[in-house]
Length: 339
Image (tube, rainbow, N blue to C red; front, side, top):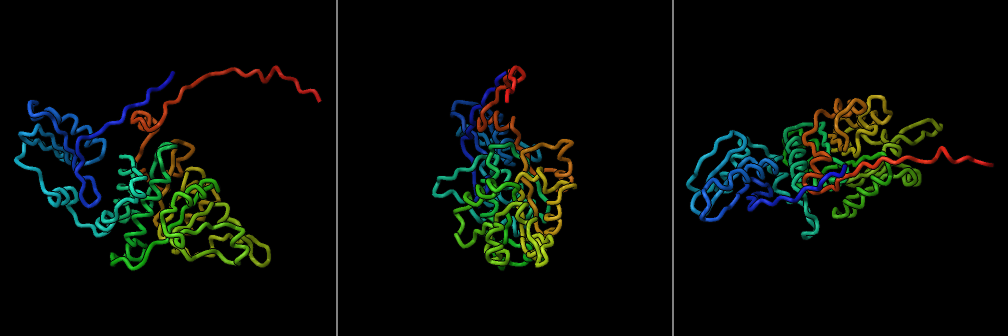
């Protein structure tokens, strides 16, 4: 049967500080009970993965801590700095640097969806906590390339890089980020989607250019290629000499693997050698496929996803169109080929 597309939900107020959403406020009429909006405030806070929620009728304020479960009437709203300190109890320099970089919205043209914000925040939190293998599982059509772009934007402008990340030093250079796909159409799509970056920061790695110049490109910050390009290449004697070996193992600070379930993390895949060669890098896998028997290697390699947004979630939220299963019978067996 046909599914039903959900309706978009809108919170009354979302309190944001340092480019980070910290609280939801649900406002009801003066004549309503103080706790009238508590249910909605909790729903929105849970949906947006925000710890603090508030309900008000203009006469009083009811506060909820979604993490501890504490809730009560309060005399006043906390200040932005108080909310920040309650949300992030421990100091983390990289988390603060990432937060200081706003999303790139192209003058309001780019508007992120709530689940994309959560996915980006979860990945950056994992990096800030020194996690080097990270997985995101999001349904097809939910904007994984947009998420990859915003992540790269924050890493680039915060000047995050492996050396300073590992030594907890002040940022000294911009990162080198590799976007790795298994099809040219995906690599080209990502390359075009990253056009907000400076032109000299973007590098499309292609076999013809490598053969023409006699070397792999190394000047740039954001590199785009496919596994097959990295696996090609020959030495002077015509023997296989994959191009990826022309880069030092620690050349890339971060590698984003698109549709990673299709080969890169598979134990049996030749492409797995590329990821293992660049093992010093933080590696982020993007997949639309939930965990199952035929992609268990992906989840074994990257670990459990830091965030999951399913096809059902997308339909319920109104972002994806429901599908309808229609059974048909072909008449192919009635046709006879006559030479």
